[in-house]
View 1: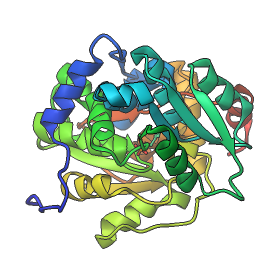
View 2: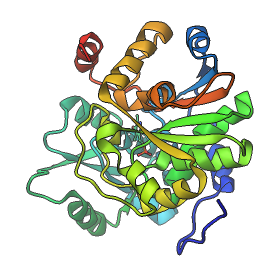
View 3: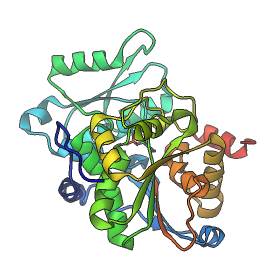
Length: 328
Ligand SMILES: *Cc1c(COP(=O)(O)O)cnc(C)c1O
């Protein structure tokens, strides 16, 4: 599809390369892993880009660190603010600490204590709010204005997208061109960055987004050509419980992504079990979307070179054990 003009500038592959330079020496170059068993079973050559081994346990460190690295002196002094109960919170807190920037994270008062502790442990100032009474976006903007802090959203931000794209850039740099790249999809920051890298480094690669069945807003948006908003979906893939794609991510996805598939929670648990049993990796449910999409999405992978982005591995261990043992 030819490039469609947008009324706002989109990040480019050059931005992904600039992000890679900023991340050099700060982010881990995560390993690319293989499974002979899976290759044999599928007849494909599958390359897993293991962002569960990234700093703080997910690719989100890439986007957060890149965005904060670009702050000017005034922004550094006042600091960064984010609202998130998930990996973005920890990514901002850790990146801010490494760069010597103050960070405020708004989290719902009923967020798991482990996540609040982890974010505080990375040095972030956590402000709890009542998600039934307070609108977190309004509250974040108020605090941001009071303290002159810069708001870094979890996906719809050019520097965040460019940072996330460095994961795919590393993958293509290491293994060369691919036929398919399967990417977990929530608000679409990861897949849009990866699609920018794919377009430049492996132009014939089909970039496929994978969402939980219950949260298929991205698929609906992709197919209808307009951003579709849904109620917060019920799924074990908590990193993909976003209600809608962003303006920037949707524009890139429309242009550079070939399809969006969905998988069931049971298929995610199956993939989680596969990672644990065969590859000895702890992968959170959202991180299993890519593999589940590759295995159950109906695409013929025989003889193909297939990349799968494993996006993260942060998860409450008790829940992890319960899911592995469950009948799902
Ligand atoms: C945030 C997150 C996603 C979704 O990323 P988007 O950029 O919102 O599409 C996927 N997996 C994990 C582990 C995440 O933390």
